[in-house]
Image (cartoon, rainbow, N blue to C red; front, side, top):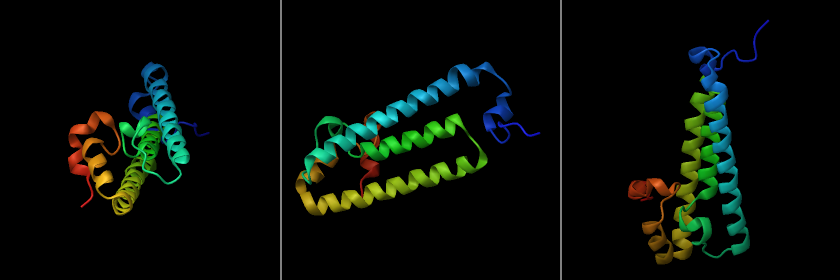
Amino acid sequence: MEKHSNGHLLEVFLKNSPIISFIIHPGADILLLVALITIYAGWKKIHKAQGELVNDGIYKYVRHPQYAGFMLIIVSFLIQWPTLITLVMGPVLIWKYNSLAIREENEMLKLFGERYKAYMKVTPRYFPFIGSLKGSFHPT
C-alpha cells in the first residue's frame, strides 16, 4: 500500500523530521494567510475604485497585490507540498502572472499616462521589500 506522502520531496529528504510538522508546514500556512489577505485588500480597493487609478491603501506599497498574493500562494503550496510537478509548474504560473502584470501595466500607461508612469517609479510591482529591484521589472 502506498503512503499519501509518496512523491512529497520533503518526506523524501527529511523523512519524518519534526521540522516538517512544527516549522515548515505552519510557516507555509502563515504565508498562505498573508497571501489571502493581500489578495483581498487589493481586490477591495480596485472594486471600490470603479475604473479610477488606485495608488493608496495596499497599492501605496505594491502595484499588483493580487498577483503578489497568487505568487505567495504558489510558494506556500510549493513549501507545503513540493513534488516534481509542482516544482515545474510553480515557476510557470509565476511567469504567467508576471506576463499578465506587464500587459496590464502597458494598458494602465495608455489609460493614465504620466500619472501611472510616476506611480511606477515609486511603487514596486509585487513586494515592497524588493523595492530596490523595481527598476528591473518595468515594462519596455
